[in-house]
Image 1 (cartoon, rainbow, N blue to C red):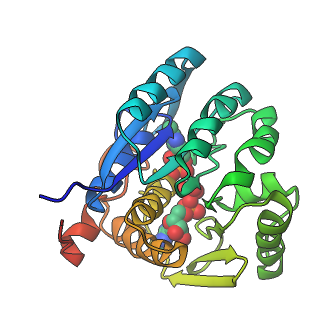
Image 2: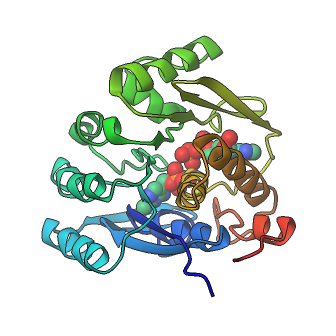
Length: 270
Ligand SMILES: Nc1ncnc2c1ncn2[C@@H]1O[C@H](COP(=O)(O)OP(=O)(O)O)[C@@H](O)[C@H]1O
Ligand SMILES: Cc1ncc(COP(=O)(O)OP(=O)(O)O)c(N)n1
């Protein structure tokens, strides 16, 4: 059997499996990629919200990174929740040395409204990690925080896309339209221009972890050697099916279905 491609996620946890590294590992698996995961923070959360957040000591983060990189070389890396500048500085050299596609989900606030990063962390993310990203996947509030202006119209989205590419220095950015009204439209900006993906908006409250899942699939597709455009195309189809076929788990805003794409599209593993 051929050795699989490997994707690594570096992010926070969710014991109920809807978001964070747990959702990333399921999404990697459902994309036919071998997943590895380094935890940054332990988050006690569920479909009802975030109950507690415990940031791991920096030496625990370093120790996990060494365990991964002493042993293997992932073909793509994703970061999600990174709470402090100290963590960002610890992670950055591992990403640079890997020299593989790097996806940033700039996680700042959970949909429950709970903060997952402080204000200083947001500024440091712009300075340390966003300039080395292959793709950044902000939702509208995250894009507003990073750019510093309100995003309400398509003109605002175009201005935000230009800000990430020209001022921050990211190679690509997908500004996700999940938080706007109407169809769920996502906008990919690269130096080649803008590409949009449009899906119907499914009327469901079960959208916990949509951003984690979407960015994890982009990472998996990049690990397989696909282009940014191909990776976002697959991720959009994956997340649309995952939201359309939610498993209705938990008492509140539950997770998406990480295995709908695999079942419906009949993904073949190599
Ligand atoms: N109700 C919905 N119906 C269809 N697609 C959605 C819906 N909500 C979000 N999406 C899609 O899910 C992905 C994640 O978007 P979003 O929910 O904005 O991210 P986040 O979880 O980071 O807030 C995007 O592709 C977005 O268009
Ligand atoms: C550990 C952890 N990371 C990220 C998030 C945010 O997830 P996201 O996919 O943006 O969706 P919501 O969970 O906010 O609905 C999280 N909750 N936990």
